[in-house]
Image (cartoon, rainbow, N blue to C red; front, side, top):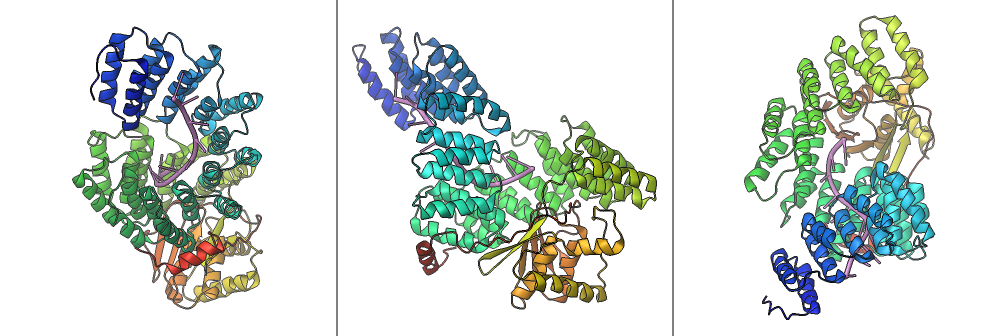
Length: 621
DNA sequence: ATAGGGTTAG
């Protein structure tokens, strides 16, 4: 590009800068900038604003800010350009700070400003501020503006206030792909998977259009439910649509297939990708890690480093470390952690990484070392980290450290009933009945049960959901009598109920009844009666599976010759012939009984027409 | 001249 001379007019600069913005040509932009400074002492507001946009888009925020600070006057557009520069690059604090300064300077924000600044109010911490900004928006009558509305509802959703988000959405006079996607993904990101899918289906019926972002969100919800058949439907559908940014969808599909228990599909998609981002690698690594395939995780990670096209990030290390932990590769995990500590790949060691290593050491029975690591790490240990160590103390019967950790946990996380259970079982194992009573009393006083236990199984494209002691399923009578029959059969084969996870202080018989009501037993029993012999059973559980149900599942696999896979909150358990891929190591889960019941069935994610189309296409993987 | 939704981890 040739710059003619000092006689060039302002609109000439404008055209040049416009080109630079479109091409993200930072070098050329800087030349134009330098030329401008030479020819005019202070450029007009709109030219400086163009420069701000250019620098912000090219990730040179400090240059952008410099231009902004040097401006002799600013208008709403220049303020907004700078604020959205910060917002889009993730500098939420700077964006908000500047927004407040803008208000102080008596510049009236417009719909562009609000849409942009709300992006920086994400998370629970930004929520209060977000609400204040909401009131400004209401006063200025921007609430029904499509861009502002989508941003606003997204802010509420990300702060966990889904009802407020839905309220904003319902008030929008018009809807488009973005606002619809925002609300669907809001539900999905909060783990309200059925709600997300139900809303998606309703909006589809009402004529919403979808793009790759929409399908990515739908796949998130399907991953959460492990709804494999529906996931395949969406897969065939997006293949037919030939959507742009297919890479993002491939990332989602890798995650979906691995969370639905189908690692082979996930791997095929990964292998066939023409290009991969760090998210693609992370998704497949996490997949293998959750399935306990530590060796594959390590091999893939090696490949990733050798290929050297994509840099590992902190999530990569999380996946690799937890892969080593679940796969029983302690030494390899420690080696990788060492490399991290020595700054090998330039990834900062975060508290989550320490958490993985604590888990890994604890699992290997190296409880003292795990404890020592917690004490010397430069972070305040979280409840999750103490909890992981407590689990290790339980498995490896380390009463000394266990007692210390248990007391600590009960202090910092008094609402979590699971902690009291482990602590009291620990006391019980050494005959300290007085302490057992005290802990139980404390539990009754302080603990709250947050999430009811729940399991589901997918058969013939329908998700059958069971809550603890469920009596709502249409075939409940059959299911319950099947569980009772299984109990008798399994006992003859050597099954002994393990009551250590039962919270309540009741007699043996009562405890056995509670155990039998556990939702995964109901789902397994239903799977046995509702599917043909030899069909593998795939059960998903929202919490961690308990020792007893794990054992029960082993008997299902052994006596009935079924492959059983159970995905719990933490990982997959693949059980064949009575042996589980997890090697019988996990932290105890918390059970709840007598809660509300429901039976949720979705039979199709896409509209009938699209379903018919999908059925005609073979999956191209 | 300035604007909104998404994919991995926790």
